Length: 225
Image (cartoon, rainbow, N blue to C red; front, side, top):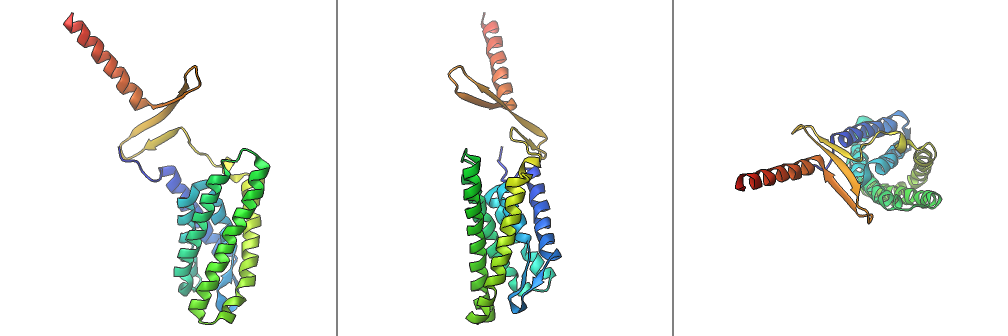
């Protein structure tokens, strides 16, 4: 069977978080002259990167280009598509590595630096975008301060949501079951361990196939006798 990139549940999460990121970008826009506006939509992108991983973070980040169009900053839309997409991707990759750390305190400290790094990428991205769009380095430099404030606020909000309130733990997720609605088949994973500690993971389909093969072999022996 062809493996899908996203489960139905994950697609729903991507859609919901994309809509939330756009909404948070639109609800509190603070204009900064020719340099666009400041918002807290990044906090949702950071959260999405933690919950959905690099690809999901990329998609949610890139989708915020729609907010630029809605608010009348369509000339920034292409830049936002690329910059916020990269921001979500990089942060998602960072969180994948951070989740492997067993010490919670160490993970939190490193996560703070990873989130700030992603925020710096966003600031640099818009700085160079402003140079291209405004054709003026001085004018582009004006956006550095508000973008720094935006990144700092979003970093604080996302850090609290992820590591203090622990929002990801409140979201239902299925680690052992993947349902394919198109073929109406369930693949419930059965986990077991041998005496020496070796993990054996099989799906119900595999177990049923093995059982069927055993029955056929026994029937064949009976016929031969």
